[in-house]
Amino acid sequence: MVKLHSIKELEDQLQPLREKGYKVGFVPTMGALHEGHISLIKQAKLECDHVIVSIFVNPTQFNNPKDLEQYPRTESEDIALLRQNGCDFVFLPSVSEMYPEGHKAEKVDLDHIENTMEGKHRPGHFDGVVNIVSRFFRLVQPTKAYFGRKDFQQVAVVVEMVKQLKIPLEIVVVETMRNPSGLAMSSRNLRLSEQELEQAVVISQVLHKGQAWAKTYSPANTLGKMKRYFEDSALKLEYLQIVHPETLNDLNQYWVPGATACIAAFCGEVRLIDNMELVPLEEN
Image (cartoon, rainbow, N blue to C red):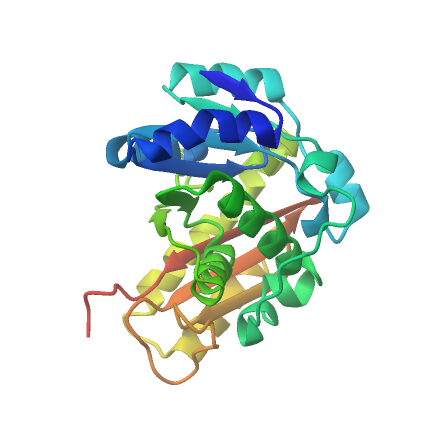
């Protein structure tokens, strides 16, 4: 595996591969890697000739400075894990490399997608996502880029960004990896105590309850039952919504294929997100 720190090193390694017509798979990460990230790398290896992973804790997508400061950083462990799983290149740029003096941010019109859920509760977050992901896409020029479904709204933002900026690549979404308890794998889980890890399981439990209730009740009634179920937990709910899978508009009276419940909650000081499809796409 080749470690790259500068844009020049990146270009020197990837340009010959592009000239030979090789398919390049790209997995952007903020490090603190876990099996969820590895599932993206494995999918990329199946579909592409070469795989590159970036590790960059992007400051522009944190609206809370304390959250940025406390975000787990485990570079040596990450690199060992990437080597074990057959990654070809790891790109480890500095903040100054990604945001040089005079850098101009990309702007896209995300409309409702950035004004609900994560966008509503983390102002400026998706501007930071668009900024860094578009820059990585321009630099790496991958054939395919891989994202986990756990970041459901982020995926919708990236898909819309690629469409508006006409960036020639395919976005591949990989299903959420979960611990045996059902808790979605997340780098933030490293900050949870043993007791908090047990308490956080209620997030996946309420989503599974939603799947069951969706077979009988309307979206509005299902949401009400999910919120009441969650009230008995030790976690603090930030939002819980049932949305259209593409527009992210709230669903009330009628279900649509792919209807998805999205949740954010605090377990102690750690903010966790998750989502689950309540109505399968193949139904209706």
